[in-house]
Image (cartoon, rainbow over all chains, first blue to last red; front, side, top):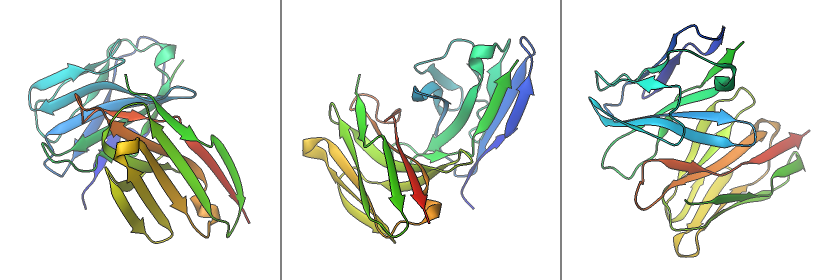
Length: 113
Length: 110
């Protein structure tokens, strides 16, 4: 089954404790992306990657890091989480240059105390 | 940047009713999609519809790209249709970054 998976699905942590949210897709997609969803602000892009070893900032990259060492994986790293990073996070992927649908993972609900 | 406006912001229906959700874009968009976010927060792909009309069961969508809007039709609504509906599209200079609307919150009561 074609899918995007994220782990963990739920996480409660404390300020400053480094964490990683994993994202994996099995569709051999080149493009992968992270979004965060906040009430009243909708979904905003954090980082994206056009292919292995190619990443770039989205609209709200501050406080986040990403890496793309393998085509299927695109982890999101919070080196020193803060309460304003409490949010619902989505990973997404799509093929390039196909004009096709973008597939979203199930979401990770993060709370930083 | 592109602004995406969705209407209505909230919609309350009784089971069996029909509804139309609208999405307006301030500029031309590519890769237009409609999503349903269920009460558990998951984003479900409904339609990839950069232009034209598509139907999937009780749902259908129409995009008029030249006039910068898209419509989502829900017929014979069911309680499981409840949730938030989003449209999203990419700009001409960055087609892969989806710009999301603020959503339409739909509640369907039995």
